Image 1 (cartoon, rainbow, N blue to C red):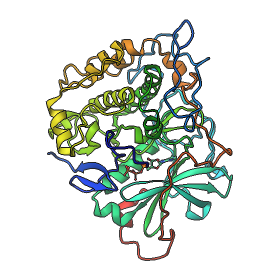
Image 2 (cartoon, protein in one colour):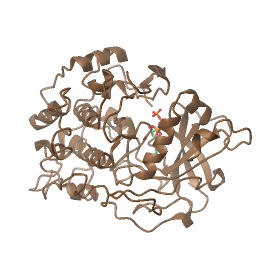
Image 3 (cartoon, helix red, strand yellow):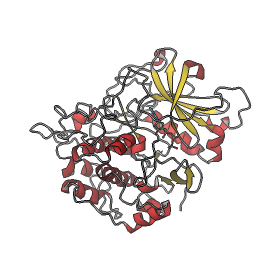
Image 4 (cartoon, rainbow, N blue to C red):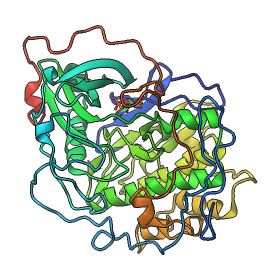
Length: 441
Ligand SMILES: Nc1ncnc2c1ncn2[C@@H]1O[C@H](COP(=O)(O)OP(=O)(O)OP(=O)(O)O)[C@@H](O)[C@H]1O
């Protein structure tokens, strides 16, 4: 990632060890449990005027209306994104994508329905199904590659995790959770996992390749987003969180680095490395310091509402260009600030946005929006989102505020930073010391 200067936090990378950790200037933490515009209806009006021209083809919002119908009830049982538990079913192909192995493509799936779809992911592909290309991003124990399917010639992203590293960093459970959670979810704003496989040294997760790069990069280039732009991205994230929560999944790692832009400018949440099914409470201290809720920092049990806190931090960061508890210091300093809970809201923040932020970034769980009687509905129905037509948003009928300049058709990775390539060859034969930890792959 580019060095974006000292006033911003660096891009975070997970520390898969049980202590705070730095890697290439990117910090993150994990401690295993337990504790410690528009039209008359009001569309997006502003384009990303502050983004440099090299980075943006931001449209001026001729068409994208956020408004219209009242929001659907987002409750787990009844809304358009309500979950229905189902046993294992056949894999479903997303409307615009194709499974890497053409034979594996299932019938089209209505993305607005939110029944649980367990894609058959285990051992579905092998290394020889793909031609590996450049690295798109790196993590603490692996990297994500652009690959091309030898069957349908389409491009995908494959996350490669080194088993030894996963085991050493005590991330076996999180890694298996990541695969299981991704296999379970099916939503327009969540990454699709097509399959997993392994060799003696590595685990492989085959996902859609999302060409538009990270929201993180766009935000840093833009410095901060105009109110309607932040609202658009926040609304797509809110729908995804609502969906995950309806499946009792806490995401726990919301931040602009994990939000990718597709070629049209819609968001896809990636990196389910900390996602976990939690019906009630959990204790694991994990996530990115700037985005942690105080109950996580204080090693208390916590629930899904930590994601709503993080949504508040994300909205703040999109509107201001920095996170509210950042002060240039160490993670310890950030934690102190989080526990102190004082947020300075710049005068340029829209009053409705500020009201929402105050209700999300509140340590008082009896007051935090998303954790109250109406659950996520109270977030979606907040005045700041008043013009959002949630159904149209869910079906991607709202024109995004920024269309990434993806060139050269599919397989263009020019919007991703360059990384040194892996030197160790994949797929080598040898003893499989850790395979028994990953029998689901
Ligand atoms: N499906 C995808 N399409 C395009 N790029 C992707 C995709 N998935 C991940 N990436 C890129 O790779 C980077 C690393 O991916 P990811 O965060 O999932 O890995 P990780 O090992 O869990 O990293 P971390 O240690 O930061 O959590 C992402 O920030 C993104 O830039």
